[in-house]
Amino acid sequence: MAKPSKPLFIEEVRDVVPVKKYIQIKAGKDGLIEAQSSFSINEYRVFFHLLATLHRDDDEFALQRISISDIIRENGLKDFGGQYELLREAVFNLSHRTFSRIGELDGEPYKITIPVLDKKAEPLLEENKTHILVRFHPDLKPYLLQLKSEYLSISTKYLTQLASPYSIKLYMILKHRLRQHTAYPKYPVDELRFMLSVPPDTYKRYAEFKNRILLRCMEEINRETDIQILDITELKRQRVAHTVCFALKGKPSLELSDPDELELAEPVPAPEDPLFTRLKKYLVSRSIYQGWIDKHGTEQVKTNLELGLAYLEQRNDINNPVAYLSKMVANKRPPVAGKVKEVVTPVVHKVAKPKVQDSQESARNTLRDIYANRINEVMVVTLQNPQEARLFMDFVQNLSQQERIPVHLEIAISLFNKLNLTPETLADQVKEGSGMIQGLKLHYFQQIYPEKLKQVLDIYQPLAENMGFSLV
Image 1 (cartoon, rainbow, N blue to C red):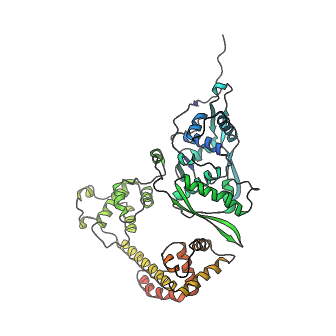
Image 2: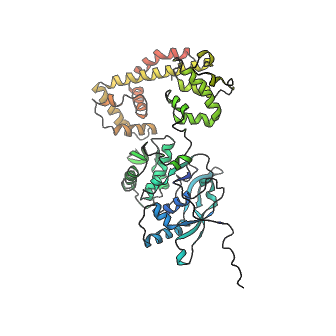
Image 3: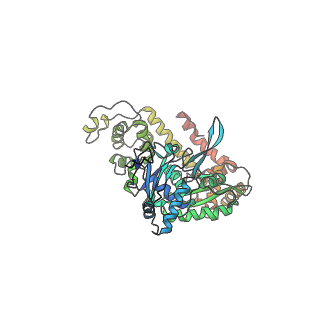
């Protein structure tokens, strides 16, 4: 009688499972998005397929049976024998790949390296070679399982449409920054080369790096994904590019269009939330609303917002509704039971009026806005004179030639130069009272016309002092 064969693995093998249409991965400085990872395009395809098979409640990585034909189908590849071998080779290569990032240990810098896979098994019989058994390395658990904060939830439909490993990596990096509401992220050139895993002996000159990698990635990302790179600008010192700045914009019609992606995307208040619909009237953004909920809890926020909105909807004496509502949601005193339900048509005297300090802060914010708008009016009126406009443009040009200037002014100069302005069009194009170019205007007037700014300050500073604060 033949002896029963011993099991090949102690752990259970997870058979092929339905593949999700999104992946989740730890982001930020302590995550994998900005870590170095030298994957080929096929290795990325295998890696993303493995990520999409993880269960949302997994505590450990399972030994996973993956189907090569599924990966071919998901990526829209041609089904031929050679493609099977290429993907099988990618699985083998992935078992030798790592993620590397820079960290600290006892205050000293270290390069931390984590393997991608810790186990791989290939069937030897020809009829079984359509699948492979693999398992993620356990050190990747904090980066791929039970994610709680600063992670990227991203649709695989955009990842599978990108044909370059550089485009895939740059897309994930910029997608995360845009999710953080950072429309103008910047990276030192060396750091960007590290994250994209550009070989040290390749494209050594920045011009080559930009033309052969960044601009090609920009074109592919803009064509195939849900974000748009409006511009790529470099900041220079002594004519050498040291920092790369991206100008980003989302494509609203494409973002989070997959129901599965919506299920586990980073927390965002649902658009159909009737309470948030009322808040939008007072310029409360989704991020502010979600921030209140994260800090104070859903029940306290929604109960207190009902009271605050009832007051706002009956009055027009609150100049800064966002600040007022922020104070309201932080109030931990429980409201009178049933009060909100009883107020069908809100009655002013039944709703708690804002505290004195709320009104004072609203008045201060209003005065700050008036002062900033007046400063901006003075600058725009001055720059409407073509001669003054030429002086300003010469000042910016001379400033750009200096060796050391603050980074925010470097970025502002780069953005300003791309506007291709003339002295006649300058004032109309830079009349906005916010943004980096506003900082450039302020710097000019502080250096050239400080008396113009002082005249405005002398008018409004006494009012500010009466309210107990200073405008500068």
